[in-house]
Image (cartoon, rainbow, N blue to C red; front, side):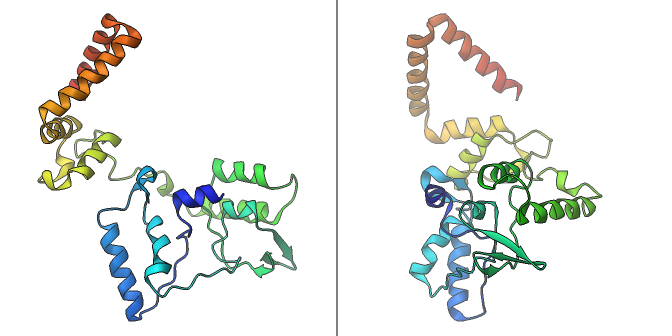
Length: 233
């Protein structure tokens, strides 16, 4: 669990309280400026959405860390927090339960319950079952199955993850509405920005490695297939 916290951030931002003090506004301005360009999932480079940035907050601002076990109880809390029910009231490590952060409802939650809870009745299982029931009642219009509006171009084609990374890396080099473009446009523009010599070196290196592993003919076929696939996108 500690390794996961190192990757995703020490503090889960399912719950964050901010007042109207000058110090709080200074924090919000600092946080917003970072998130304007660096709010995405790139754990390899030390970034995880809006959350990882807050690891620095106690070092830079006058912040208070709430350690009350009843706030923002989530599936990862099951690993080391004990929940019990007494006369209709729920407690977590002695603290009264305030609210639950139902993150990953479905397979993830059910897998965590199987891994970290003893078989049989448990207060969290009861609360989770009630949550699913209420979720179903409030999802009559099927909004939970709606597609993310930013996953496609205006023509309906899906935006590739690699293209998102290219756009992010060379943000200032692209003009206009990116949703009016297509994957091939960004791939070609990226090659131009990186420079043809750099592109040829990378391509030649991959081709030679493929030749040593799969043979010349098989490698040529792979190149042809990739070119055809990109043309059709």
